[in-house]
Image 1: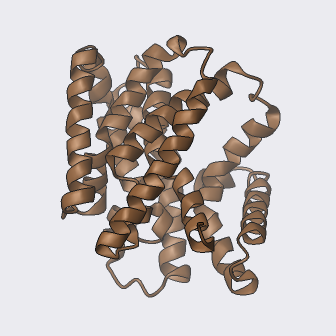
Image 2: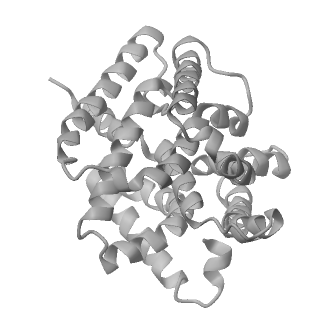
Length: 291
């Protein structure tokens, strides 16, 4: 029987796909909405401003008021995403935004089965080395870029194959559940070998790559082919970027009050975070700064 700790860690594994999926969706959305007539600098101004301004704003907030024990130079913190622990992958996303036009320009050489296969194999090799052998000694934006380039490129490719998603997609629920449990067992076994709890919190491994791809196919069908395009879902998605930035502040406020009551804690932190985001978005132009 699993005790409460292992149950918590098992549930944690269900969302190991989150950051890789974010990169995959980023490539997908960028390709779908790319303006063929704009120049590189117009593209950067349009895309980076939506991320860079809120990222800079919240990095200042976390660095100056929340995690003040961080004594690294602010420029270094900004470049590495270390102002707060949830910001770590934003610099990597900015790297992908910078190189996306190049990927788009040469997509006919990239988006084909042989090249994608080579990229997938090389990505699996890098993930295996980083997770099972020795973690690469690069700063986070570089390391994460090396471990996620394939999902970003796959997202670009998926924009051209989105009409081929089968309508008989619900069978994927079985492999999704299996992969979630496999990832849990994989992390648990590595923990028993190394006694390093970080094994559970790493999404940079071959199994998570496969899990992410299967999750993407399943969720794409659910949200694109079904009735999930509701007004509520659209409103929540518009608020989610700001929620991403502020939820850690809300978490830090309520954690000493609520302690380890996971369900109540999750509901309150989520509700307050979305409530704040909703109110902020009611103030003209403020969302451009806060996200």
